[in-house]
Amino acid sequence: MQVADRIERVNESIVNFYLVEEAGRVTVVDAGMPGNWGLLVDGLARIGRTIADIETVVLTHAHADHVGLAERIRSAAPCEARIHQADLEYLLAGKRPAGGIDRGASMWLLRTALYGLRKRGTTMPPVATASTFAHGDVLDVPGSPRVIHAPGHTPGACALLFEERGALMTGDTLNTLDVVRGKTGPRISPFWSDRALAVASLARLDGLPARIVLPGHGEPFAGTPSEAVALARAAEKPGRAPD
Ligand SMILES: [Zn+2]
Figure 1 (cartoon, rainbow, N blue to C red):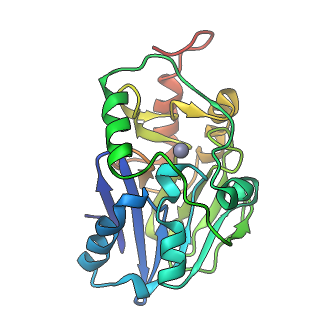
Figure 2 (figure 1 turned 180 degrees about the vertical axis):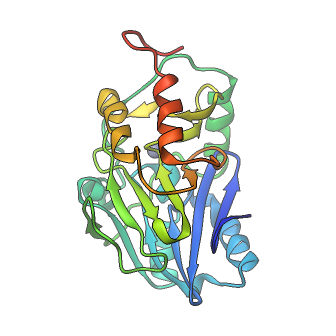
């Protein structure tokens, strides 16, 4: 569905990715799981576009459920894949950055794992080549997003600010669904490379000019990044592990 000016959300189960259209060309933000090709093609069809209209695939970070289709898109369009320099080695190797997971597994973890198995999201197809970006870069691609490096979920985890469209895509720097415990509302991801850094990096999102927050997992948050960050911070319980 359309979630902002010329921004289409492509969603199934825990997977979100976004199509940003400008003058008939498309930026794909994140690339789901390997089994999500039909979902992508259907999403493009909804906005009257095809794979050949994709100009670039911009990846918020190198996790299997965000880069699953990246290599296939890159070679089929064909187009360039882009990622923050700190996650490049993982993308090229098809290797997950080291890290941990919050305690408190529930039936949701099973649901997430089953969907991942069905869509082959447990392995990360390596991307043959990608260009990199850094904090503050404005990418010369449809939608002209500004890169906000907010590490912690992964070393190179980024949000993308589409200022003209009033939209902030947060990847997994801020989610509205905890895919392990099923909790909803703005929060950091239960997966991380450095949990304390992920919480500290919320400051990078605070104050950004947008009217809607589009996360890597969960529903759009119809508010400002500052409102989302305040709720994500409130969801943290200082001094102890979360529920
Ligand atoms: Zn992730």
